[in-house]
Length: 364
Image 1 (cartoon, rainbow, N blue to C red):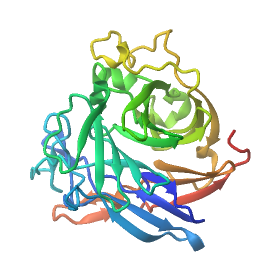
Image 2: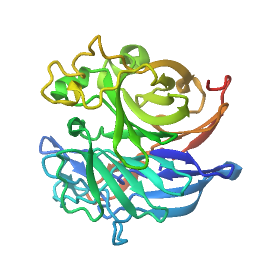
Image 3: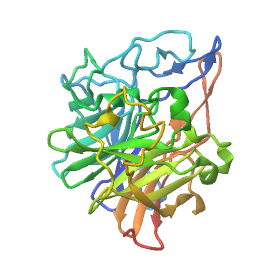
């Protein structure tokens, strides 16, 4: 449940969120297939206490449609999302337009939650009881049959997100939500995405769900960031965003081995919203080449998490407790290891962990 992390108000308590549930990507008949061993799993928000050195779940809020029925984490649309299979990789499952692959989380002073989703990709507004109030998706997605309101408010170009690389980071500052795309878009194609260092961050009005700005964010070179990644730039990801106020964000860049936090400044970055780089016909695309007239977010290293002893891999949740203290959480993939021919799961042995870290210098 470390896909997202938010302070719950009481010391040692946090709101966290699962992703779509246990899933795998085995190769079957020469094809990588997305499997769902528990296809009825409903993504959930959980309130966790960490007092005494152990995590304890205090409350579970299952995500529900407008009728109060639990949703699933299954793929939404044929042709846009991965085809869903059962645990064996051969039994085809039905697409489910209600399904969400939830990631980061924030909670407002009114008690509502906001989540991001990797499928559409989408921004999701959730009532305190877990009922989905609205899902905001890219224009032209044409998602039909969902059991809750769906609004096409986001730039259509975001439909070009890579599979399993949609919206991953979510922060809030004032009346704006900041949403980070995990990886560069397949714009115009996957070859471009795998080499690109440019992803995008959207600013959305928290009252309307409509975007008000869009920025380019430039990743570090993977060769310098993580030498163990073998030069594969596509291993670079954003997994968390935290609003710092005064036009600044705390952004987590990571591979599965290395994670670092950067302070990113929005104030002098180019607003791309509604311009030529929101059109799929623009050549070269933003992902293919960052033009001179586009200024990405300026950034500087704030915390090198890779240098802190005991920090686990695949860190996805980051929360700011105060200027001198952060909390981080990993995604252990539900302990998903190998599944034998009888459907029995072997745990990967990776626990869910949450760490509170005192910083040597306050976040400025």
